[in-house]
Amino acid sequence: MPSASPSRCRDVARIVALAALGPLSPAFAGETIRVAVERLNFETARVSARVGDATEWVNHDFVAQTATARADAWDVLIPADGRARATLRAAGDFDYFAAFNPI
Image (cartoon, helix red, strand yellow):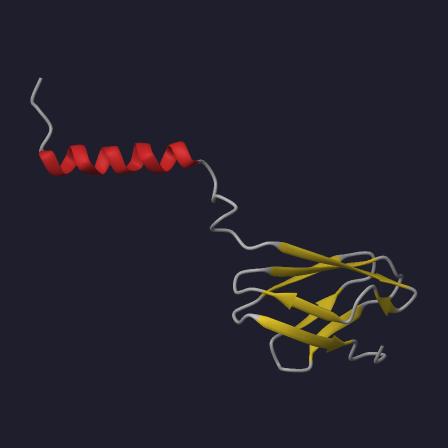
């Protein structure tokens, strides 16, 4: 059996090392901040987050809603009885509102 080249062995070693880590470690993945929407109100209308964090809105109402950041960081449509997400590209505190019925 022919022997593998040193570069091939390094590539295989990298793949094995990455496979041992499993899915993205929490140190590398952002957190998910969940916000409920009930009775046409957000549980909170401010998100404090780091780069890579995601905000997920869970709409428990029978009508669609938006989550529109005042700083133009995101504008998402949250379907009735559905969910929507936005991943932040900048860290900070973000105020947002509902464009259909400002809350």
